[in-house]
Length: 291
Image (cartoon, rainbow, N blue to C red; front, side, top):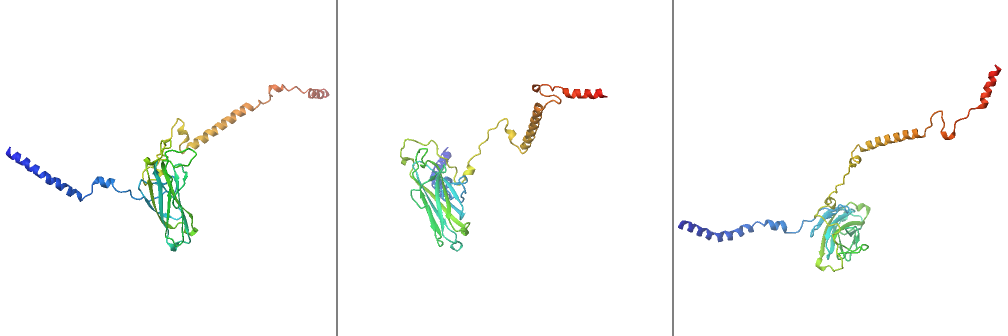
């Protein structure tokens, strides 16, 4: 009993030393939870070429892509009620020795219904001379509202699209390499939204995951099947319809002919029977008497 009691006291004496040594060992290696949740998302390296292929950006995610002069570039981001989104773009132009004149770049913002939203501040169109190496564009939208009238173009919660394009450039400069950096910021939140007597039930086209294309995000909708669905599908369905149509056309022709043709040697009853030719009968009798 004394030995067991002494062993328990020794184990209790070692516990503080073990507790002090554990943090020192874990301080050298980062915590898994901190590495998983901490930090900002990596910049997106792609851009879409249409609204349907626009690349979605997560909150706080930037974009840095290599582009060609003259291409349309599309990104998508989400905005909530009470926020005032602002977009900042930096364009690194092609080397001066390769360009033949000034270039004009433009940034536009659209909502989920493809309605162009007005910029309250910023430089939407920027022109760089032949010697310029970069351009800066920006656009600050109006505050996102909680609801709007159907006829108005007020910004509503949901997805917003950014389109960057070249509106004026010498023809030989189209296709030259360029680099674009995009940053989306938003100030305000739902607490700042002014009460306006209404509320949007659901966001307009809510964005999906960051860095993903909106074309891949939409899941295909299964078509409703009926008992005649198989008749209109298949690689050889057109042959079935051609043969069936030809058979029906031939049958209709035979029936139509049988209903409209007249029996040989007879006229329809409505015209009456054909009377005998009396003159021709006496003529034949006269010839018979002569002989």
